[in-house]
Amino acid sequence: MAKQFPSFDDNTRGFAEAQHIYFVATAAADGRVNLSPKGGDSLRILGPNRLIWRNLTGSGNETAGHLRENTRMTVMWCGFEKRPLILRAYGTARAVHVGDVDWAELNSHFDTHVGARQIYDLNVDLVQTSCGYAVPYFDHQGHRETLDTWSDGKGEAGIHNYWDQKNRVTIDGKPTGIEDYI
Image 1 (cartoon, helix red, strand yellow):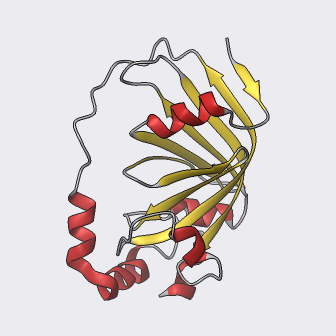
Image 2 (image 1 turned 135 degrees about the horizontal axis):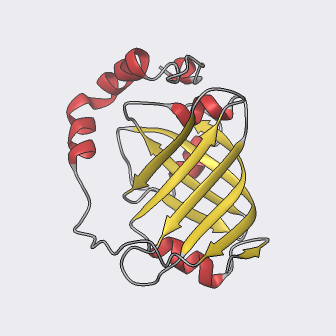
């Protein structure tokens, strides 16, 4: 039932862009695999083989640490509301941090957010669909504003302090590279 494509087409791109949540998976050479849900207005498909997603400050910083060792990334969407479909984009990614040369250009695809921490730039080499027949229905009730409120309350200095305190290493103790941007 699975179908594989070398890139996004109009159908797969439209499906991805219509979803309210997506999941990102990465892993270093050893240690834990990270699978993280993402939402809000944080993902853009820039072309048939390229997508970016902006990471906001949170309790962990696993993706940044993993990509320093292993650039593989998978992004997955599920059809929870109507269409029964699972869509995955596989490829290699790089982390673009707040102070990097191409941060401003990539971040211009999104509204301003004080908690913006990295943008992940994924070079997609495979897009795969599968049925999704066993994925349950869930209704989207809206964007959760808790992280936005928390970030706004911290302000830029507070966010950078949080990075210093909580985001320097992964849960396996691997460096994330955030210290260069504090």
